[in-house]
Length: 291
Image 1 (cartoon, rainbow, N blue to C red):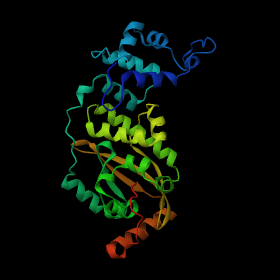
Image 2: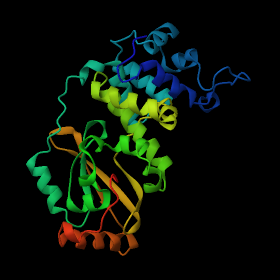
Image 3: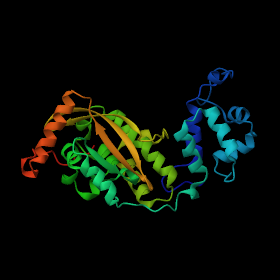
């Protein structure tokens, strides 16, 4: 079976999804101890209404013309969510998005939006989880300006920076979310050499990344919670919301929020007041801290 440069294959993804389904959940007998967990190929094929041979060819990447109806049926059996279903389609038809240009330049209008958000940390996340732009409070929280340009990448920081586990009190959750988002990127752009190089670097240098990558989870960075142990003001309990940039689906505007009246809100106000007084009044942030 042909392997994409990013290391993602249709078979690996489908096998990982089959492994998480218990046969009894679908009304199937378990037949005692199974050699491998989850649904067998023949069981999935039967429930999806296709022949076993057809499904085997799909897992082997030999059915490029598979219909949407078949993919929908397989997705229903495997209980794929909307993101996973889209990821499966991207793996089956890799040519549909591979030619999309990599837009690293953030539009002036979006930069103005960042600049006008004075009370909330915000930044733009691009392909491969690169940090492309940020506002002043975002920099005060994450320290983008003190990072080398090559290090302005959320995945590289999370797995390779020696202080990442201290910076993120819930580092295990951050790691899972990061890998799942990279898997989504890999499905959309299987021929991206820079993404392949990043994945190769992370796999070679971090065992946890290798283990999480083998799970083939996919997840959109849409909203959630982020805990940060800031080196100056202490712990920040932040929510985040993500907004696709109009005209460029690969650029995401990420905005951190704090509950009204919370300690985190007061700490953000403190950071904002320091930045408003000018860089010379801003307390030193430990280099290399992104969000």
